[in-house]
Image (cartoon, rainbow, N blue to C red; front, side, top):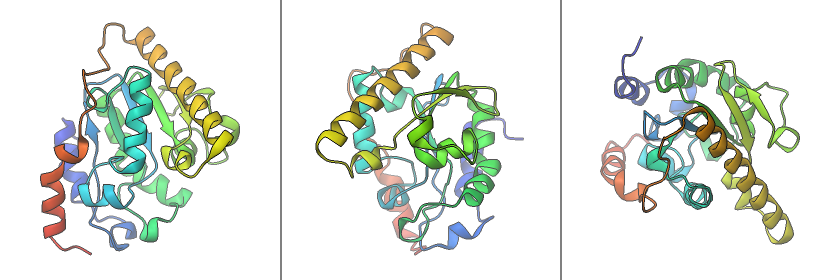
Length: 223
């Protein structure tokens, strides 16, 4: 059993226990943010930018997420962000349910056990299916509270990558839905963990913060 999130992170970054780490990527990614936060944000898996930087949601999707969180009083340094899948699937394909369960059983469950967040935001279908049920659907279950197997209240919303594919009225509608989902999560956090500050004065530049990790990962030439 891991005694700290830093010890667990070291184990995650050296993981080679499934074939995903061989799918033309730079190896496992870990987490970013605060290991003491009452709010956990769980995404699906790393994209190209995340694969390079070694942390979740720092590319275009992550920057859109930062803006959405800012609108409800949260910055990423005050929350804990991780993914169900740690390694980028080849050509950015959607991970299978089986791949998600294997990786999350191995690592995400341990992260949650150490962090013990009060509230979880599930971003997208892969996170929802793992945290709720394989039959769950983001279009049907988005915005509804449920309790994870970790006995933590959670709410699902659209992944920011989905928003980036929308235009016009569909985009406006989806953005408002995400806003209200995240607002509900913050209000639940304030109810269950009053007094926690979830917002810094500015949005942290995660690309700058993890730049040295990017250089280290790229220099290893794992592709």
